[in-house]
Image 1 (spheres, rainbow, N blue to C red):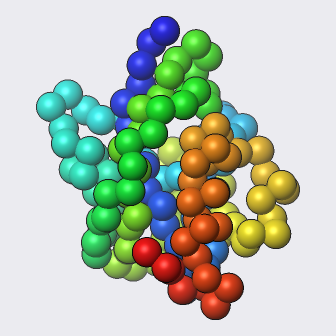
Image 2: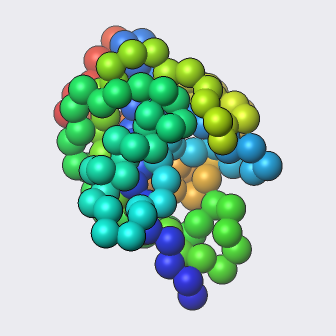
Image 3: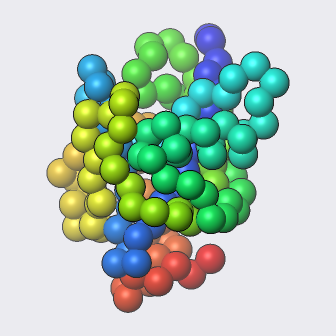
Length: 138
């Protein structure tokens, strides 16, 4: 099985909503982030991808976990994600390769087709670490 190594961002706004994006010509909603370039550290890749995908700079990064799961858009590929909790500088806006962006509320989880990483790890982590007030409990 082929392996894809990525860096992904858990981004939560002040209302406790989780940022998800869908890239053009794909069906799954997922985290902002992307593949590591040759020799690139996951944190560098994530800062680059955040700017490319939503036009924001990073205020802070906190490593959460290295997660292995099925890739969403590449059949027969395993995904290894270096996952970080990220605080942004600026307002997220759709950029080049994105078709959609949504700030997800807990009651909307079943309304979207979620990538395996998002469904299996990100959403449970988000629900566990976000208080009813929208504040993060990390």
